[in-house]
Image 1 (cartoon, rainbow, N blue to C red):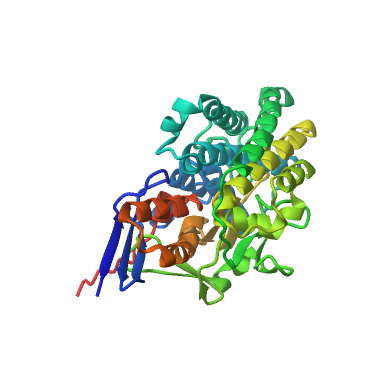
Image 2: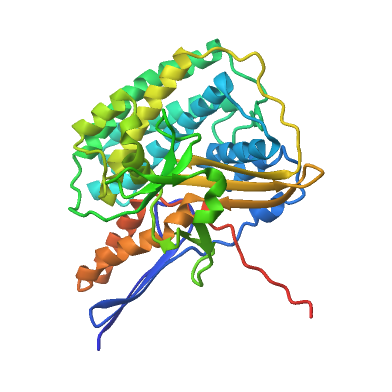
Length: 433
């Protein structure tokens, strides 16, 4: 009887801290655990008793990479509970802010976290020694996203201008002009990025994923929409965001401080770029669709390694649509709509760069948060990542352990997990006798 154990004590080039342990016995995988060991962060508990205006600013601190996603899902859930709706130029501003975050996050992942895997470098810094021009292009893309978020949100990380009902202050057209100028250059860089990453050497792998992503009747859904599910071969099924808890059930597993999620009773569904693209590729901007076709992407992509190409296409879409919104921007008469608190339950979901992010809040008679529930994308993907790893390692267990470890890390980085975001739960029970 032969035994082999592969231990990766700390996953590199992902957001947050996690580990992987694989046990093999007689040439078969006997156990595989993607371990998220960061301490629970208790954000849902911290929100209890807070005023209805506070969740956007508090939950933004869950993540330094995608705070806008948390602000948007929180705002929409609170507004739904209070019977308010943000439309017109204020909704456009929210979408514009979100595009800025997408550009920031995707550029970071593509250039500094993921591309080194395909070019044989241990880090973005090592890659820069030989490919300084490429890394500088990635940084310039990220700077364009930073500038857009700053113009609307007040600063590039953890924006301070977002509030329930809209914004504290709406920017003028003149204030958006510098961001637009940089976005025009960024759009060219984004197109070059698609062509660059499409030329990488991708393993010939496809998985029969079950996808989950928002769907909007006229947009490549980012800010809002209903929840779509499907395999990309047939018209997606779906349900309203308010019915989320009837379809997505979270459960605790022994080896993780993040929950696993089941969709309609099944584990292992996928959310994120591949899911968005599979369910919504026809709604990309014309320029982004052209870039996707030139990169060899069909209407659906099931190869997890080519997720880097889909992310690059989404950068093109974000730059292109952001410029369209800025060109048509009309300063709103007021920066926000009134949102009066009332007792009730509200649901909100938006597309963080890594996948669908769901929030639910119950407000009490005094307008305070009585219950909060946050379901981040990485926790939803955790079981699917483990399934990908099983498929990858099954026929390769005879490889040396260092090669197996490198393969595993690459496969995990395909999904760009934000481990800190997902470490938010602990089933804590205190027996007082």
